[in-house]
Image 1 (cartoon, helix red, strand yellow):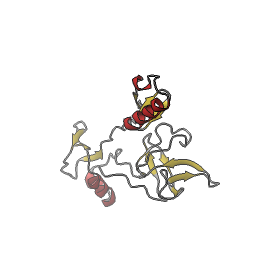
Image 2 (cartoon, helix red, strand yellow; image 1 turned 90 degrees about the vertical axis):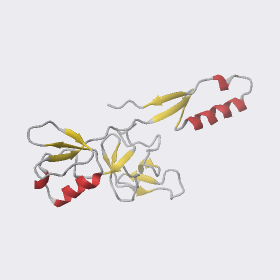
Image 3 (cartoon, rainbow, N blue to C red; image 1 turned 135 degrees about the vertical axis):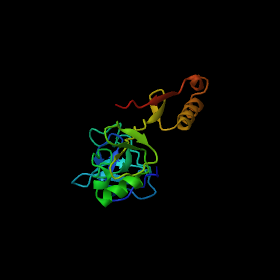
Image 4 (tube, rainbow, N blue to C red; image 1 turned 135 degrees about the horizontal axis):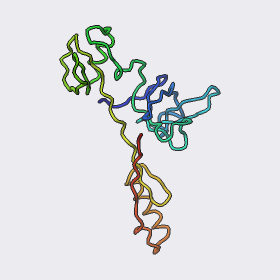
Length: 181
């Protein structure tokens, strides 16, 4: 699957499956959170980095912790197709083929079966197999959360350097993984 490219004016799907947008420029391209969603008054209600990760503390209402952007929004739901391939319009046929899979297909009385290389038969029904969302991972040192293990270790080293002899380097760093529904 290709890397997500955030673009101004477009709508995106969050890890939680919600539609958010349009994406607006925010604080310049050198800022760590250069993209935002604005309310009707121009106030920032959600900030995003270049990978589509939602800034901590700036989640749209009801999105935390699943507010990260995972794909451009499409009103065409390729996971819910129930029409045989030969009866689909050309745009939908091309979107299915271009998706890259994995797909599922149904052919005359059989069960839905997985496919990584479909034959694209006119009589069979194809749909995109929904991918399970990837849970976020965070690292904690005490009450301080960090995006990477390296950042947590650097923080622990700074705390130890500021308070020598207190054993802060012996304190554990714990890994937190988001539990998805």
